[in-house]
Length: 320
Image 1 (tube, one colour):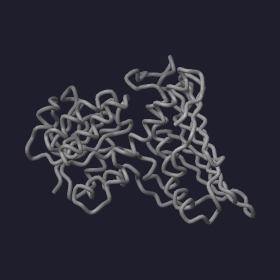
Image 2 (image 1 turned 90 degrees about the vertical axis):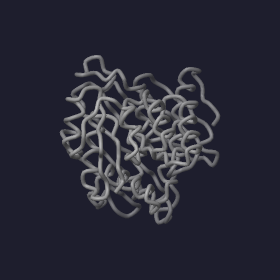
Image 3 (image 1 turned 180 degrees about the vertical axis):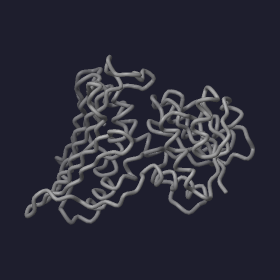
């Protein structure tokens, strides 16, 4: 039995609590929030104890791992504390807001000889997995270009419950898609960027390939959170559009080839949060490869997010 301490009782904490509740070999022994009422709402999902003292939960000798679902700026403090206490750690994306803090987290994991896994969620989403498999098989030729978008309203002045504790889109949103880009296409050579709360990064590769990554926090509040991509191969194009309305995302995933019009691609209905947290538990047990969600991957994606910030600040492209 793997025993988890869950830090965070917001939406993501509830998602993680639900995932763990479905694992017979996992027990969530405590859920932390700043108030016991908030902690209790999520603790009920996984039949756990609500706590309002994160340090005491991290220090419990019966806890094997800590899952960090706190605001991004707080990740380094609690991740390092948990690692120093000898716990394995799962940390939500973005891993950190500054490179030196991310490297500090990784160093703490290496020193403690404990796992530090990061929620690079898109790697566990069926449509992204399908495109990854297509790049490896070569059935449609080479992947020529990738365009991604992640559009929200959290920075809009009229957004209800505006979430000011979230960072700017270059880190809070684009990090997910920069990881996808690195996973599918490798590291680009140059990056240019334009925008502010609505940002587009243009990435060039030495071999002539290119990609665009767009993220916005300024969509009008009536516009639902939307995520998608267009992956253009030599002989096919995959397109994903996911709209989050209510609790169930509405996704359309199609492929068009040189001989067929856009056709829906069947994808197994798997919860990606369940998949990545199951992998985390299996890594603790030694039955899965930790490299897939390792801190190294998150740091590589964060590096592109920070390069986007530098390109925006300097008004010119940067060499990677």
